[in-house]
Image 1 (cartoon, one colour):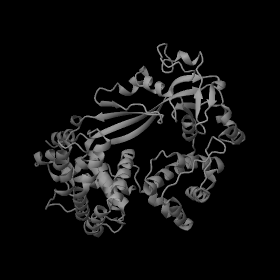
Image 2 (spheres, rainbow, N blue to C red):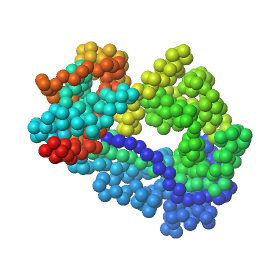
Image 3 (cartoon, rainbow, N blue to C red):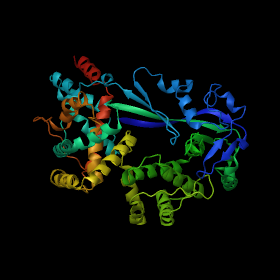
Image 4 (cartoon, rainbow, N blue to C red):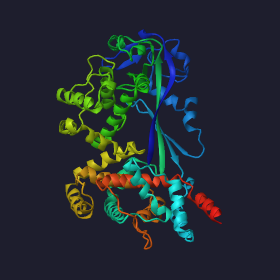
Length: 497
């Protein structure tokens, strides 16, 4: 399971001669780089043993050399993880470096600890619970996650919440086989938690390329952006239709601009990410959406607006209507992306109730495994769209098992698949280890634990979707995995003795 994605930029060479960059006739904005004496000094780019004596840099060969170079030691030096490096692909500029945590690095004894330490009083359990799980009253999402952690501390869930978790688990166990059959086709990893670095080897330019003339002219009088005309953060990355193909990469410049956002601009950037997660189910670093934020922050002084999200909604309505969004740096380049339902969602937003809409966005989690979740969602939804009979049966069972427990359930295919994807991260696809891990640890945590001597007050809020609860269940487990519960119990016992 991919817990996070981190994009890393590695400069493997510098180029100081713009004449070495030549446009190709294959695709717009695709270039090739002529080798010169300076570039031949970089080992990732040139070797005397090269059999291919092309006068241009072989970008694919550059990436192959890069994964064997000293640059990679930064990403592979950790001894407590299994490191997996993907093979370079001609059309893909980055290389994935996966780091898998071994299962035995976690304390998997939360349930057994609860059973072994029966002598601990309920007050002591409550003390441990409140020590390890701080209360965050203003964040309803965090409050829910806090409550879901309670059974690990010998404290039951509120009755209604327990009923909801049980019905989600029942639904998941009926249809999880569909998801795991798909996962096994595309993933060889069976580790519980993983991180992944998108490592991007780049050639950085030591000059200001002509393609930035449009951008430079725009910002020369802009109060905040004009200083970026002096920054050379433009690079070339190896990707395209041929091994020798390169494209301009503006990521370093974009991140430099974003890092200097003011408070209002940061707030808008966060709200757009939450909107993307809740309504579009796309990656949080989606280039189309990121570019829309850059344009808004250039055109408008957001500190002068009360409703900054309204400014973005109005801008995006116009973009969707025209089906045109200008590239932020390249003139006359349209980067518009079609996102299903985006225009309809934007048009349904009532400016008079924009505060209410934004408040609901704040309740939406941006969870740490979002990139892997999106990949599973995409594959699972596509699968059920081709299996109409199975999808119909799933919806019928969903209406019976889930709908009665969740007033906000919409019974869409996306919502049903979302539940399966979220809970799958507590099990994954290792038949020998992780299914037992699910059955013995986390499933009982949510469904098999009851106490007759304690009754928790019901929740004051129930207006959440079933897939939101599934996500919160998964997040609560990740919180518990990172705790040293045994040590905390020992400390409490020594204090009481």
